[in-house]
Image (cartoon, rainbow, N blue to C red):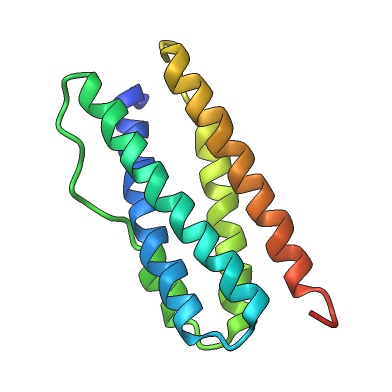
Amino acid sequence: MSKTVVDLLNELLESERSGIIAFEQMAFYSSHKELNRFLALIRNNEARNCSVLHSLISRREVAPTNNMNNFSEKLLALEDERERIEFAIKGCAWTARKITEFPEGLTSEEQDFLSNMHKQHIWNIGVMRDLLKPGN
């Protein structure tokens, strides 16, 4: 059975909630100033995304999920900062891919938001890949 627009919006909401915790904790444990600034930006974007997703779901007269996926648990179980960044890249790629799976029936507001969210996650991947390069 294929997922509905609301199912997918809720799935993204669960993921973004988990991302807030993951990126907050990564920043807490990192001593890398450039990485910390970037992680704070991602965390703030994830929080904004949660707010918008919550609103979009509510406008469809459905109660948004209160759940969170296990991304943060998996990421924080990794002890090495490099491994955490690599896993965060995979998480952002998962989100970007999920956004491309939406069926027909999105409102223009939903399309615009998801397009921007997709770009945001692709940009995050690029910055994190750059941070993994030798010398950073």
